Length: 154
Image (cartoon, rainbow, N blue to C red; front, side):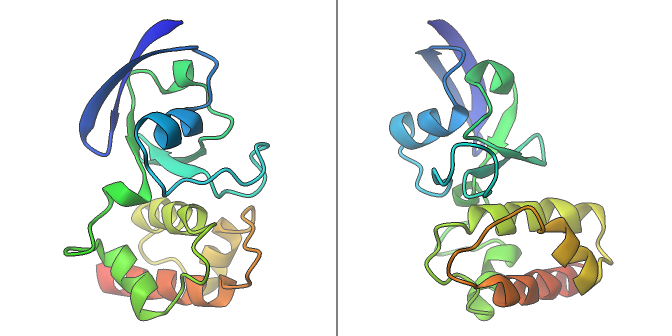
């Protein structure tokens, strides 16, 4: 066990955990966050995606020791029901969240990509999301939401 500190959704957090524990387990079990999900446990699907220092990572295979001292943002940290982030508003407008299980991946990978490339084309966005899985086939609506976010934030 080791004392590990990080910031999650703007709030400092410290825990005495096994340094090899996946970040996802701490987010779900200790902090009771429901955004990142356990999908595959192998970094293949993206359901566990969070932003660490602004970059998307797979929290199911990121050890707590690797997250120490960093800032982590989950989809809960983007906005609220009362005041959604523009990206969340775009997903709502496009009805891009079907079952919602995988949404952390497309939303956070999309945000990081568009923030770095605000004039991204639909083809660019599709390429950026190519390593993510959505089992309920909401990809088209998710891409439309990301295109909307890109246009509205440009």
